[in-house]
View 1 (tube, helix red, strand yellow):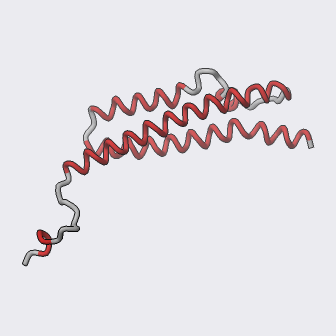
View 2 (tube, one colour; view 1 turned 120 degrees about the vertical axis):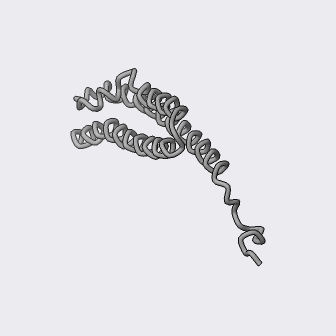
View 3 (cartoon, one colour; view 1 turned 60 degrees about the vertical axis):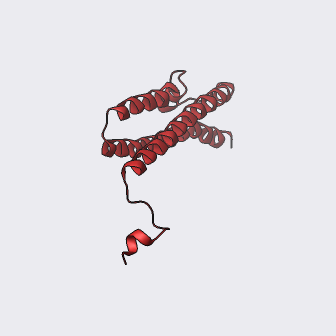
Length: 128
């Protein structure tokens, strides 16, 4: 008796549908991550910009770049470019683009947190 065909709990062996589902899920998660990142940078920078102005903190260059009004367009533009590139890519390239997208989003998040929080740390050190 063939054990592969009689096991009702075994996952289907067809890979075509699962690749499409995986790509759609990855694309949806990537779009949500990039949109949330864009909104977080925008709201965080507007709140912290007024705080920095009130205390006359000398801001590093990376923080001034992050506080620029066009900075939230960076994640949105990257998401659009990756989305349009995924249309013309092979499934393997789509998988790699999704992984790079998450890595790039993580790196940009770390940069934004560092750029927006480091002046607060300098301010606290200066006030103490």
